[in-house]
Amino acid sequence: MKLPEKIIEVNQNQKKENEFWNQVYGGMSVEVEVGELLYALIRSTKPRIVVETGTGDFYSTAHILQAIADNGFGFLHTFDIKQKFNEHDYPEFNDKYIFYLGDALEMGKKLIRNLDVEPYQHLFPSTIDFIFLDSDHTYEQVTDEFNLFYPYLKVGGVICFHDTILDKREQKAVDEIRLRNDIEMIRLFTSRGLDVGVKLS
Ligand SMILES: C[S@@+](CC[C@H](N)C(=O)[O-])C[C@H]1O[C@@H](n2cnc3c(N)ncnc32)[C@H](O)[C@@H]1O
Image (cartoon, rainbow, N blue to C red; front, side, top):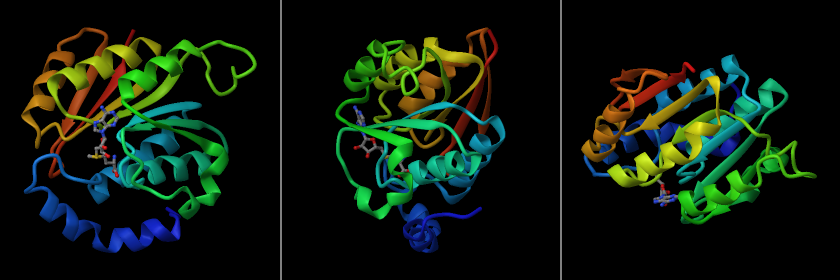
């Protein structure tokens, strides 16, 4: 997997950082293996539209965008209440994403309202193909983000939740979601936990 220079630099320290941040509630970027898995999932499922909440330092974002670039198509809508990255570090991805500065729920509603509105239909089609939720891990935020975006996820689309082991509030929300009969989910016991679901109907 080819990655931006900036991310390769980060990667060298990422494992150590993860070990440290795993001790801290609500840690930072996703684990190295979660970044790699996101890349692999995007490469294999080939989504047109991806939604990410919790852009953070652009670590998960860069893996998603690199996969979109390598697929040759796709577009990312990514949300964070703070801008912690410099877009000039990633010029190769400029035309492949929109960053929404603000609460994922508030800004996400704007995205949803734009669905099917010409002339932006190529950027805002009526379905989402892949969702990665990694913003605020409170029970309410996870549940509300799920309820906002999931109705627009296509059948067969993938949804991932990060920090499902580390954060018990996130875990509670996801444990409720996994009881639905329109979703099949697995929990991966990475150091902080990643739940991966597929929409069945
Ligand atoms: C765990 S970090 C995300 C890490 C990122 N996925 C990565 O791999 O680099 C969580 C992020 O969620 C953001 N956040 C917290 N509350 C939010 C909200 N209500 N809406 C959008 N983003 C939020 C924080 O600013 C933080 O950058």
